[in-house]
Length: 295
Image 1 (cartoon, rainbow, N blue to C red):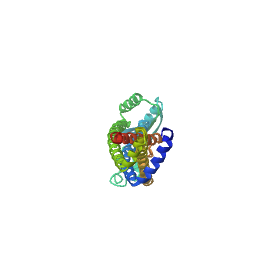
Image 2: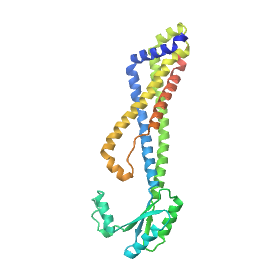
Image 3: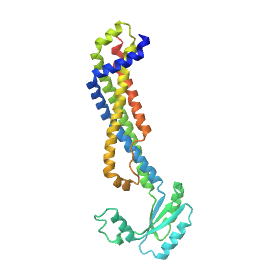
């Protein structure tokens, strides 16, 4: 019996799998629903993290000017900025240009109906990407001290908010992972017990002819691992299809809004989901049959 265990296990997995195909397909479908929730949360985390990194390395600041600033003051301000360490360039945007940018971005509602004077003139400052937060704060402080500058926006507050949002999403993903763990153990454990009940006669015959517990468990563990892995693969396929639909319809809008193009789950995360699904499936199958096999 021991000499033929590998071949016999493979053959029995295939034979029993065909016999319980409907049961296993229902199990894989149930698992894919659980996994797609986890994969969706991870997809949100990945894209939020990309947006956070983009804003953290935006390398720019906006100095909004007071009303009535003369052209001489603007030229002096830009000359001083160009000579500041860490500043790569500066660009003056008039009130008319700011309004035109708003309209060209498609905001044709109440904002577009406002006069040009409602939009503050500004100097857009391009900064080095490797500039530290401390250096950025020093430059912003010097700009705020100038009499011609009304306020300065460094976009650090948006980065901090995105960081908090990413941390919250990671926590939610961890909670979903626990839910998925419970779903895998429950679904596969129940499926294996049903399959075990349907194959009770076969198992009793194997035990009578001297089959070991390891030999009897083998097909169930493989089937459990296959169900877990297939559930993860099905969820990735479903999420991928939904991602392509959303990206095809809203890619331009999302790119303008977020500053980055949406991306799918990186392949290491996708592979890790499949591997974890298979491992959880094997563990759940073992937990579901360990007491029932050893009789």
